[in-house]
Amino acid sequence: MKKNVIALAVAAAMAPGFAAAADSKVSGFADITYINADADRDYFGDGKPATDPTGDGKDNLETSAFIANAEVDFASKLSDIVSVRTDVDFNIGGNDGEASAIIEQAYFAAGVAEGVTVIGGVFNNPIGWQAVDVVDRYQSANLLTYDVLDGQTALYGNNIAGVAVAGDLGPVTVTGAVLNDIGGLTDKNSVALVVNASPVAGFDIELGYVTQEDGAGNVTDFNVTYKNAGLTIGAEYMTAEEVLDTGLSFTVNYMFTPAVGATIAYSSVEGKDATGPWKDDADTRTSVAGIWNIADNLVSKLEFTTDDPGDGDDSTSVTNLRFIAKF
Image (cartoon, rainbow, N blue to C red):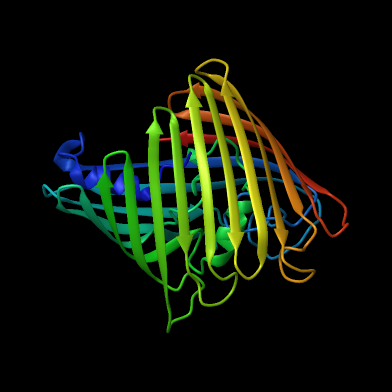
């Protein structure tokens, strides 16, 4: 489902250039959301709980607020084999003016040989089914499996830093990477392997594996995507050596027309014991979203999400109306 950064980097390095003038372009989106939430959860993957949308540190168990974020992406391909990309995220500030701007991605991709691309820098985690940016998602809220991955990456967002080599083998792309330890240890490194395959048209398979010295331990993720006309189905299975027995996610999106669609997403994580962030009784999250493509560059999503903790605590919910304007 996600626009895999490895696949994009391979395509960019091999392509003859961007269509924009001077082989460079600027793109991005504005993200305006109304949230009505009854719990302190980071539903949207921006590092801030839904109940603290302005980052003032106040933990109100009931929140009704508008928030605004934005992303600007800079991409360039000024030589035949090298492309460069930098994505910058912007978050709204409060009355004190404390807004933030932070680099999400900053990497190069070099086509060093036919079918072989080297990628270096900071880039979105290629492991896992769900996209990092909301503009690439079928619903707004994180899948719980995404939360596991995001929770293990010390960098801002679900991002990693290092060098990767991708080999395009026709229907299969194999990527190996040496990374900074994804948990943030300065004296260790993580190693990742990702295999992407498309055995038949409309059906994509991904197997990802990344090591980690501490935290959740080594993570394995297997996911598939099936697309046919207006239907998209995604399924994911995940394990984390030290903390997670099973992580599952299922997403179904159907576009009734090019302008109107709906998504239902379900995810579940079950920990290894009664301690830690994921308990041995499975936590579940369910999201139902309606989608309206108002224009080519404006999408609206109305969504209701519920969390059911496995430890017996009360379920929590959030309703949001989101507008994503692209440029």
